[in-house]
Length: 280
Image (cartoon, rainbow, N blue to C red; front, side, top):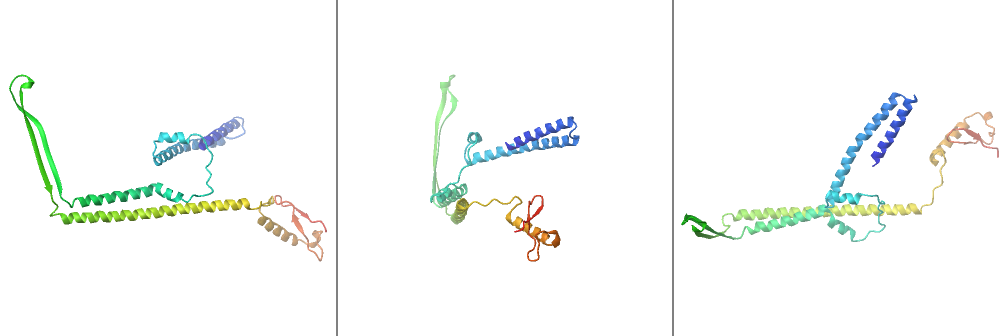
């Protein structure tokens, strides 16, 4: 982990500062500042470990696997995946089918459609059958268990339910479920359109990135810039230096004549020293 490497670095710095303090090369303030930096770096590691565990658990939920199964896939180092140079035509449709939000919207619409059928079933007559069978014992004819008297009991009944008086209420319940189904269908359509928009935007961004990379590869190599910075900055500096040179008196510049003004170029942009051009 990068944070642990940073902790090792600041700990080494603290040890070096303490060694310098013992030899009188640094003050007690430097040691305390180094110790404070070590403590701050140590305090940053637990939240990072917690966040990594939470991200691992979230990834396990998305993969429909237990958290322990994800650890085996995350162990070791691998190369950074390279984006494909070409995109197949069937990929957007497959992506839309695999998106969790699209699947959730589709299942919600299917469940609401089933509720319409359940509401319509209440409009028709219903039949019910009830039965009971058992044994009963209440008299003793002897001492043993076999001497107890027993009776066989059986009961059967049938019922019919007709929705006559509450039929209008049941019909309104069907209309409510149908309206909810229409709402679920519209939500599914909007989810599909939004998912298609996101997929198309991602594909367009990928194609643009690939085109930019190919153009950069075909571009000619740039010329090395001067040490003092960009060409624009160099032009501005030379212009300002030429202006300063032209404002000097004529006797101070050996290259200045009546027909030709003095010409000076920058020797180095780092130290600002000058040299005068040789006479042509």
